[in-house]
Length: 325
Image (cartoon, rainbow, N blue to C red):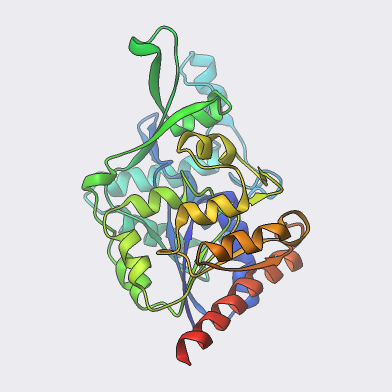
């Protein structure tokens, strides 16, 4: 079985572990979000790609869901002693090694897809991890600022989330997305998949940013494979992160059904909502033309996460059987 997943950071990475456990023999390709990428201290940082890489490679800090296990912060402490900022985004020493290798390879002319492949070789990933694009795409968020012209300004997503702790947002802008091209292998992975999965990643700044790369959304919509998503919204709120803030910024209600309709029936074939909190949303989602099932959607244990992944595959199989009739 060939499975292609579009994934952001922590939630997507944890779901992927469950997917691997559910179908260990599957050929899984992960198309990762690059909208969170930034340059700091001269280093190119790709938080979502690295979170997937560390999680599936066994090097993640399990408590945080991001960063390296058993990390040290000697470089960060020295930077602070020199009075060099910013101090709101702390890089660990092990993590810096990854960014050094990436930055050196990019500087030597290698595209991000080749750099990511090289980095993943060290971690012996059980999946193929592809950036959505080799080009520079960064997510910016428009927020209130009384001192800015017009009373608003745009900040990089990392500053919005890490430094500002997600204040109210007015718009989400994927800078560079309109001229970017899918990275090598991305469109083929979508076209050749037997199942396409949208994990419970942020639908606006993670999966949404991937879909904004010209050609990717259409490829998913045109794919012969069933497309099944899992709601990141449970009981009217995000399980993790700031999906509520960015959904409001694009005019989408913070409900499991509204997120399904945001993706649309032209993209999604199936949608999973939480059985305990959102079972009543099934009829609404199906009225929008998307097959919907209610199952437990909290990744409370490896077994629960595996069951979530299996439920997505079961719905995909059901949809494929319908098509074959």
